[in-house]
Length: 213
Image (cartoon, rainbow, N blue to C red):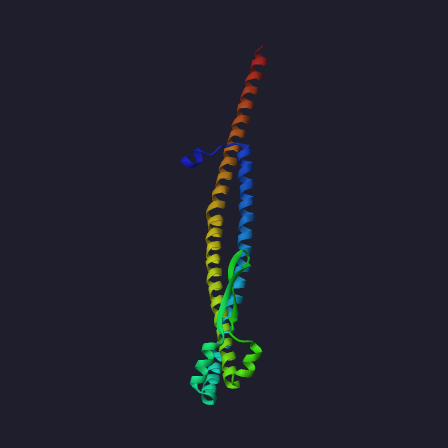
């Protein structure tokens, strides 16, 4: 008998409790696996989205660069720099959303403009206005890609954590509980057999004593 087994209470109540713990552990394991599967699906869907967004971002960068070249040709660099200095300052506001219990950052792109948007359309030369809008789109996509990539890292961390917990329950906790239940049952069966043998022995002794009398 090992030291661990020597500390086990070999009672029917302990056997019932151990079997109940096995059921709870198995149920918890199933829930962890279901959550892990959902997160894995979300992970690969996010990978697909990032791939598409990167493609869109590269196209937007090329378009913005072409718009800027056209604006420089039509209005001149000095005009572009002056309008850039007095116009929109881009920003992003951070919040969070929940995916299967995992908090994912949610960034919202905003802007703080020194002039009215309607006034911009009238006052800013069309090539410069087009370049401005194209670069705002590049900035928006850049923020979205960064948000998705950060969320991807968080999902991967959570999936790895769930893997460790699932493995610990499946390969350590449940086998130990089953071994404990098996040991208790074996000891109870041995004790029951010993009791039966003792009862038969006592009965035989009593019958032999009655026969003599």
